[in-house]
Length: 377
Image 1: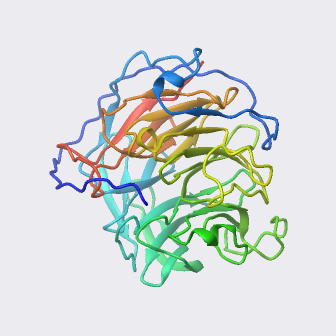
Image 2: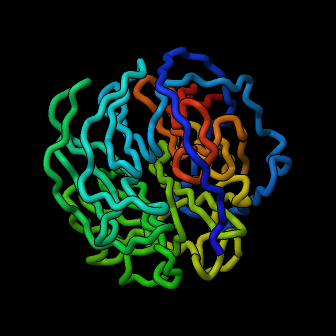
Image 3: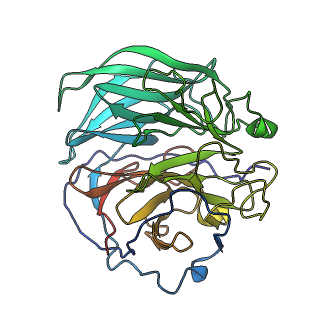
């Protein structure tokens, strides 16, 4: 049974604030492994008390507000010195400057918002906006040419890269990002069909890898297939460490949410296993959390740490790259649901709240973008 969250009414504010209030998080440095290691002993974390003794606490807890009054924002991607932000239900793409100026870039056509579906992940590369969206005919990936410039970006007509991906009111995945290899990676949920996550002829419950034009890369692990890894329930965060290691956050069902090290062709177990299972047929997560403390969505990887935005857990979690079994939590319950986090060009982190998506408890000014310093040693 899926976890149930209360729906609540929205109330809005239309103010912007550019004040910068800095705080520090401490994380350890060190290289991350380049592939999952069978001998690694993952750590389960079901409460803050289970964190390692070396995990440091933040020294301050008041980030700066960059922008307010956004409508169910889902993903952000930087272009030059500003961000493009997707709104799940409206289909809007808005441009947000570092000073807090917000303007509409355009509206993605054919978005069929409902449940967890709608305009989800976005990415920017070489003059294109890439988008993952739910339509009446399933989830799809498309790109649109970006014209203009800072303060005047506009969208050209869409070019379809992948259509007909199974969609549902939940478990749509939806995060997209370019890896260090220049390929586009796409997370796809099981769309409520658990068995499909183990079927190579289905795109559900997978992480996909494609060329920027949608073609299948010649070196994908399954010849002729976009599938890069399988056995996923609802992955919504992906990122790469300085050495190229790929990480993904994933919603479990009622037992464990996960942080995984992703490698080509590997099977992560859903629906046969959830969380750390010790089953040699599948890759175990390097860390797991009870859903009430996590529900991890977007993540960012810095030189030293993985930073994860959590929805139901209403916290930002930082995992040091040299100790993937430990983590430190910040802002627990202070800003509500957190949907995405990304490293900005100025070296700070931008964090997207998600209290107006029908499952949160909106406060005046929600939803907003917050700015915090990147965790450092």
